[in-house]
Length: 77
Image (tube, rainbow, N blue to C red):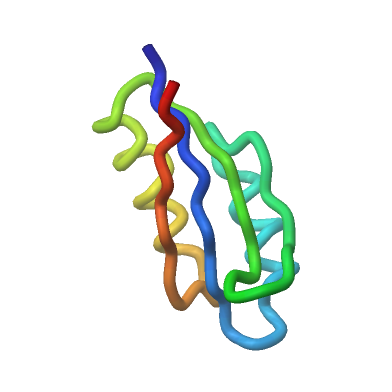
């Protein structure tokens, strides 16, 4: 069973658009959009396992310039 999660992202001022574009290019990311409220970008991603999710997606998201904080919310079925 694959792992899916929403990741809520806070960015530096004025960086939401560039962050959304950068994270949408990461393999496994199925959605990345700018939003309003306490978070600036919301993304959804999936991977074959939690280990793969961390290695293939989270590590790359954390390297995107302009991100100040993330909150990962795994999807449960």
